[in-house]
Amino acid sequence: MAVVKSVTIDGESIHVFRNAVYIFESSLGFTLELDLIVSEVVVKKYKTVDNLIVEIELEDGRIIHSIMHAKILSGGLPQLNLFCDLDDIQEYADYDRVSENDSWFPNIEDGITIEEIRKVEMPHEDVSIKLNLPINQIEWIKKQKKKSLNEIFQEMINEYWEKQDIE
Image 1: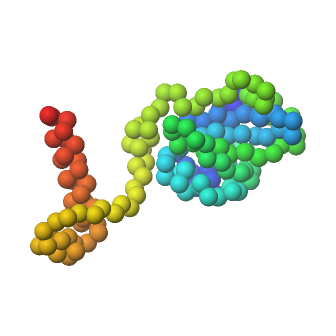
Image 2: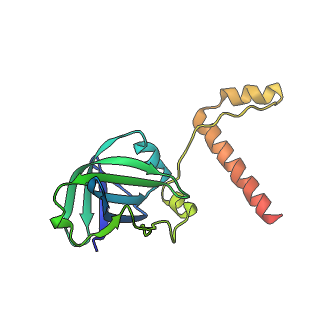
Image 3: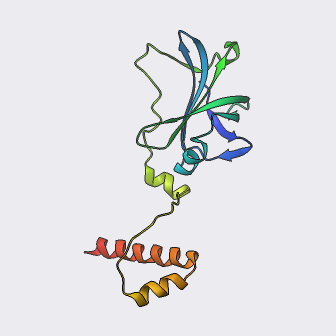
């Protein structure tokens, strides 16, 4: 069984939480498949990209360089599926094989939670909030820089969460 040590996409090393590398056999032929549990940041970065230059380093020292297609897998955790067609499968003899007719499929979600993933790489998103505040508070908000407002709201939300946990 081949075990992945690291993955680099378009020259950038990505943090992989869980993975499975295998040969998928269908009536159309063979594909090398790499299923990855990654951060939401990585999924967002690659969800609109079709072809990626991928380097997969295996624990036994082998390195696979390939142009692979990307597919976002839906599920509970952020997942990326990288795949490419294979003409010669001889060098992949020690890889797990999955057939389109099999009921078994690698389950890489076991043993990890979204909270653990977010501890490593927390996604940030813009948000718009409509508030009804006194004019003097609105004037004060308008004078603040975005970075300061972000810090203020993060602190306020964290304090509110702590207060809720106590009650």
